[in-house]
Length: 126
Image 1: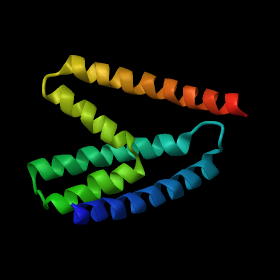
Image 2 (image 1 turned 60 degrees about the vertical axis):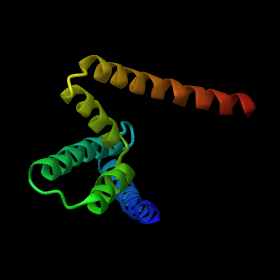
Image 3 (image 1 turned 90 degrees about the vertical axis):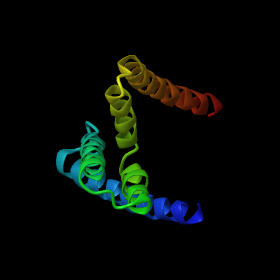
């Protein structure tokens, strides 16, 4: 358990650092009027999640340590959106289309409402 936690920790640190650098570079290049950096990170992270999981499932499974480092750790630190997308796709592929659609809607709408509620709470305390 401790070893796996450290593996995820190392991957998440590297992924988070890369997210920061990519966001900075893209925002600097394209400007800050639209969140292009994070949008790009989310899309690239989701593509990477699909490619890595597909490779592991169809070609070669390097073992739990590498799976944890690359998916939960690195891609989780790079973008948690990739984990959301994988969960959604997994539900869909299992034939649970209704659950997948509900998960997407509740996740997106719930997250936006939660951010708004958090902002409102802090503003009310200021």
